[in-house]
Length: 172
Image (cartoon, rainbow, N blue to C red; front, side, top):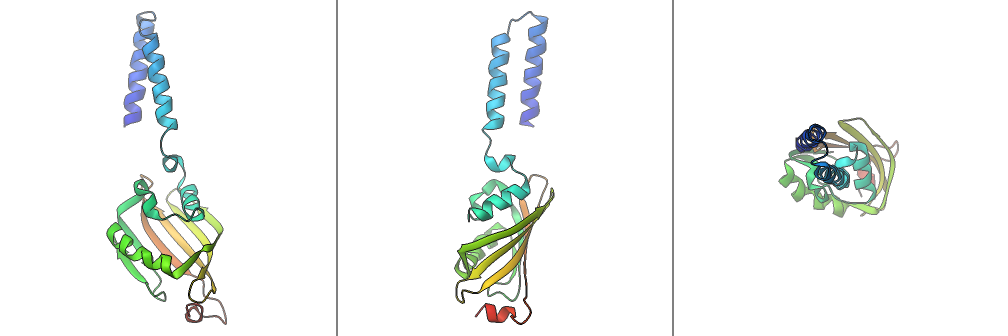
């Protein structure tokens, strides 16, 4: 909406300038420069695709709450029941209470992103990480769903279960 207002002002100034032979030429150019700065100075995550945003967040080992403009207050989070903190969490407040358990469980210093797949509203990330208590590797897939504004509305985590190495042995 702000963009359309600024573009409208630019166009009206430009047509006024043409009609009145350069009366407001300086104002038009000043407004055009201001508009260009406004677009380029937006936060980096606003200009990113959802896939790029998730890749940047995970590889920099940041938390979702480090990006408040990318979180829906009605966030739904689904963790596998085989994990100590498994369950369904509804809302951003539940997420903030639950997430410290994730940080205590995984060794994020050894996190490796294997691949990221995504389209406009869904991003899938395959991650290799170690469990702190057992130092065992664990592969998981996280699915992030986004609303039209680019905010995360749902996160669902899937664990890979290896043959001859069931998840309960990895968890220690």
